[in-house]
Length: 368
Image (tube, rainbow, N blue to C red):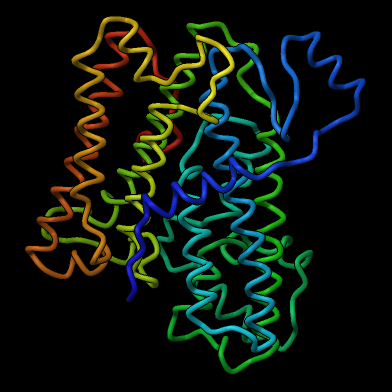
């Protein structure tokens, strides 16, 4: 299987997003009202002097990138069904879409309409192979589903996991059935629609009204929630020591789980530095690294920076987590990576919270 340079890919995609121009959103009356309230819309997203601006821009660009990749996946699937592209091409675009999703995965903070789409985008963990069973039942029917009909079905057949099943599972009838291919196309269209809802929801900054104390709590909770979700993606398959559950691994069919996790880390690193578009609109538009340094916590900031660098430099992507858990040596490697995530979690959830006097908000995975 070809490996993908996750960090380079993510960087290129985000750079492309940042370079692309968009039409100005809203009427002149709306723009004038926004300016009166201290912010404005240009290039499709909100600009303000609020301290959350650079973090907001990171999230906006990630959401836009994901919507673009999902749209490309839908188009690519249509081309594939018309026998005008290879299986490798559609698999590659699915993977690019999955990597783009990693920047938004596990979030518990942000626009409500965006967060509501999470299960529609990805059903995980799939403890009982519900996706496999539902997709097998769906594709055994003779009908070709429409995007609207797909949207009314279980979330297990709507998201990235269902497309992975079609492309990679040995039970998938994709290659031999025109109706199944059109069903897959409908699933990708529905996915693109949901991704667009997420992107549109991020056109406005959900944090503009927060004061400094509440904003910092929200920001660190956003980062902490995503980090803990990534840890869950390893702890669930690792399970009890010596008794792993490899089928709980994310993307085990495509063998890309460790690549996904590296993309998670790269996305969290971007969120930590929060450089946004590269041109913050105010002196307060800083990431957590800058907040720590301005608070005199240089050693802690250095520790977090070095931990991100270490993880990205040493994270293994040649084997999937599913494959690693097949051997004792591979399991040791997996535990070593989990420990890196755990240390980063300690630095952020404990050290940062204590040093800045911040209470981290509730995480939906707590106690799960």
